[in-house]
Each structure stands twice: as structure tokens, then as C-alpha cells.
Length: 426
Image (cartoon, rainbow, N blue to C red; front, side, top):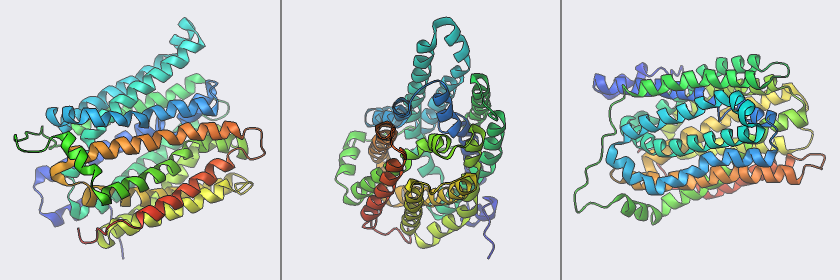
């Protein structure tokens, strides 16, 4: 049976108004541009290698990377503000500012020459912090907008279409980045990669201007406040179990921020080859996305998130086995498998969150609690991961404890999430 991911092939099934369908397509386009921005800037292998190029050790790299998810705690206090000004407006405004913050990395050579290396490192850390704050506030609006605009009946397939679009755009982007970083790249070439990413980021913000929805909330006097909704979320047993599983899974996934350093120091790959491994992971995601998306819509998201998480844990255990990744061929094969597994996890976990966990009438409070808790977990991963690597730096396999811990956390997440209520038929 042929499975198509083209949105037009199944949006017509829902009888949506043309304006609603256009919003979905523009939202997909925005996600595509933002994905390229993220790959070529703070969330890609190139950025980790860039920080390594600036002379930071694994522990300090972990601190800088942890700033981004830790800012998610702002959701607990900023959600009422976001709901009041409008989810769409907050999403567009703060995502535009975060792109502007990253664009200021391009003046790093001037900062170095004017004030020295220490000022340059503080400049990088400060811009990452500004990016993190804007991302946290903007994504509160983004989550609410996605829940409102994307119909539940196609959420799995929309997620698959999203990952397919992200992959199709991401493969040439990472291939280009690898080509720019060939040989022994200097600061200028890393900044070229970041500059290209910023252009795609600007396009993604522009696309959001055509998405409808996410209006400001007008609450009646007898309706619960956002803080009241947060308290209700904390008393929701199924939601709390989901959050516990998400914490373990996020910790397991976030230590992969150090995979580029592992590939460079242990496997001996060049920076360009390491960046090209992202393209291999994207290929794995593209191969698996249609299967995961259709399975989530037909069978429910819980089996999909469990299967993806189990496959990811097995891959992490393999990487953590000393000597298992013996060369570029095996590294590319494992990257493809990791990309396929992560896609299953993300599609399943995202659909379960929006369909089963978050009541639409209480989305502000539930999203705030989810985003804050997930942010802490995602922040602890690189922070602890950097310390683990430095603690075992003198051993023959300093990265093995890190990836074996990732596999163990994936197992813990599986045990927690197996007890979730079913979402089939929702």
C-alpha cells in the first residue's frame, strides 16, 4: 500500500475551510524553515563543534547548551502573559527576537578583536541565554497554536509530514554545512553556516504571519486562572505519569548533544563528516516518518512512542559499547537507525500530549507545566553529560558511561510510559 505524506492528499478528507487548510500549510512551511535554522545554529552538530573550536571543554559546552531548556521554567510565570496577548502573537514576536539574537553571533570576530577571547565567550553565552528566554516564551504560544490549528484526526500524519518536510530540507542543509566545514575550519566558516541558518529562520517567522488562530484568551470571572489550571495538571495522574516518562526520555535523548564530540575524539571523524551524519539521521527519519505517522493515527500514539523509545535505547546501548562504532560506515548506519527511532518517539509523544494529555479548555496551565518540567529534564542532560565525560576523560572510553546511562534512562521511561492510559480512537 502506498502511503503519501503530501498534506493535500488527506486534508480534503476533513472538510476544512480553505483558510484553515492554508494555515496548516503555512504552519508546515514555518516549521520547515525553523528546522533548517535550528540545524545550522544552536541545535546542530556544527554548533557543538563551533564551541569546541572556541576552546570550551565538554563541561562548559554542557553548561551553555543547558541554558536553552532550563529557560523553560519561565513557562510557569509567563503563561498568563502569553494567553493575554495571544498565543500567535507571542509565538511570532519572540521567535523573531530569538533569530535576531543568534544573528548577532556574526559579529563575534569584532568582539574578539575589540575586547578579547573572554569577552567573546561571554558574548556567545549571553546570546544563547537571550535565545533561550525568547524560545521559552514563544514556544508556549507555539504549543497552544499547534493544538488549536492541527485537527486530531490527522495529527499523526501531520506530524509525519512535518518530519518529512524537515528531513527533505535538512539533508541538503547539513550537506552544505559539511562542505563549508571541510578540512580544518576556522571561525569564519562556522559563522557562514550560522548566517545561512539565520536566513532560513527569518523566512520561518514570515510564514507564521499567514497562520490563523491563537487569539488572546478572554476568561470569565468564574473560570480558573492559568495558575489554577497548573494546579489541576499537577493532580492529573495520567499527565504526571506522562511527565515522569518524558523526563527520563528527555534526559536520555539530550546526552546525544555530545555525539559530535564522541565521533570526533573517539571515532576520529572530521568535522564535515560529523555534520554529514545529521543528513544520515535525517534519511532514517524520512524513511520511517510515514509508517510512524499512519500508525499513530490508526493504532494510537502510545504504541508508537513506546516502539520508538525502545529502538532509541537499543541504539544508545550500542554506541556505549566500547569499540562498537569502529569507523564512518558503522557511524552512518547507526545515525540512520537513531533518526528513525527518534522520529517514532517524537511523533507518538507529541500526538499523545495534544490528544490525550492536554484538555483544550485548560491548555494554558497544562502546557506551562509540561514545558517547564521538560525544560528542566532537557537542561540536566547536557549539564550532567558534560561532567560525566570530563570525569571519565582519562579512561579508554570516556563517552561509554554517558551513552550507557542514556540507554538505562530509556528503559526507565519505557517502564513508566507503559502504564499510560490508551488514546486509541481519540
